[in-house]
Structures are given as C-alpha cells and as structure tokens.
Length: 135
Image (cartoon, rainbow, N blue to C red; front, side):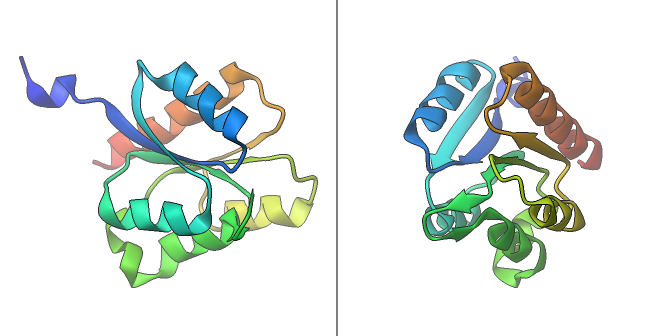
C-alpha cells in the first residue's frame, strides 16, 4: 500500500477547556492524528517541533490570546515551516474585533462555542482542503 495514502493528516487543537479537548480527540480520533495543547506556550513548542496540516485555535488561553499565537505563526521566523498553516478559530468571544483580527491574519473559519460538531468538522475539512490544494 501507498504509505502516503495511509498517513493520517495531523491537526493541532489549541484549547484550554479539557472537556472540549477530550471531545475533539473522541470525535476526530479515527479521521486525524490529533495533538492538543492548552496554552500558547505548549502550542508554540508543538508547532516548532512537529508538522501539522491544520490547526484549531481557541482565542482565550490561560497565557495569552490565540490571535497573538496566530500572528506569531504568520510573522515570526521561528514558525517559518508552518507560516501558511490553515487555521480554524474556535471561541465563545462576542468581540467583533477578535473576529476581524483572526480574518486579517488569514484564519479560514471562525466557529463559535458552543459549536455544532458538523460546523466544526466542515471548517476542519475546509482547512485540510486548503492545505492539500497548496501542496
């Protein structure tokens, strides 16, 4: 068999709510290789060490904002290997400026909590399709 065809796509989910992280692992375990991080710092470390096909990124994290992490990914040379990583924002924030910043930084979708699994799945599929089209 073709090793590339058997390889699961890698998704990084950056979410500080353990119940949501567990839910994401449960839902997507069969479809993707999913890593989770609960802080900007741990996500930054994973992004520097591993390659991902897409990222689901919470806005409000204990040690900073997801939009600040996204800005670093897009602009900081330390993240050059993942600069074009498709990102789906996941948040309960009602702040329109957060939405605008996320779009300006190139996120491809903005999913509001509480979310419908189908909505998040569609956004992740769009992210993966964007990554595949760029490859």
